[in-house]
Image (cartoon, rainbow over all chains, first blue to last red; front, side):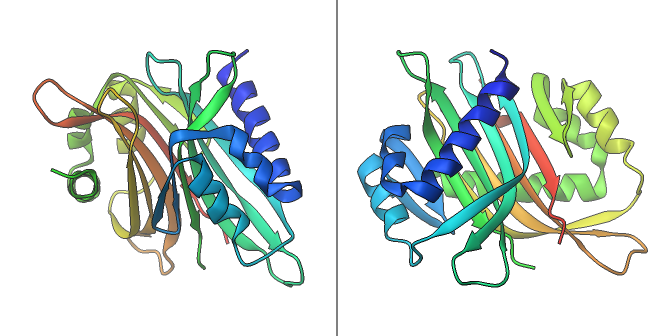
Length: 123
Length: 123
């Protein structure tokens, strides 16, 4: 499979899981994974999912605008860069965001998130 | 040196070079480097610098808003995520952008850009 198809499938899976069952994201991170969320660094799958499930909104919907992907080196990883809109339940206006993922292959032939950096784009 | 200091120094060097001597960016890329610029993929230092020096504006100034950095794996690389404003000469309004770099160490103890993804953030 080509990197663009893999990254697009990953991104769709990631945000549909985020929007329907945030705790299910645990499977996409590992102990060495890091999330930087609006400048706050969080290490490890357990802490990352605790952060994401503890965000102060219950329902949300991500709308993806762009997905860019490149192979990230000889280890078979990929960097993925996403821009889009985040709609929170009960809010009139969408929030714009940018997010990057560094995906690494697993022995089972899928990918996990080694690096994840999220920023809202303030107007 | 800690990754945050290295990435901040890199980002300042990158954009000051971009704004003063775009051709000088050639030293920061290698043959295996890739730039994705607004969805267009460009491979290799020579092609990347040709793209950047050929952009349809001569003078510009980057203003950095945020820099986030994480170590990217056992090879000693770093992922760096930047948001900021781009002011083009003669334009009244700034353009907002997000950009990610995947930096890899060189034998000389510095870093080069393996992956570079740039997107304007449209309002």
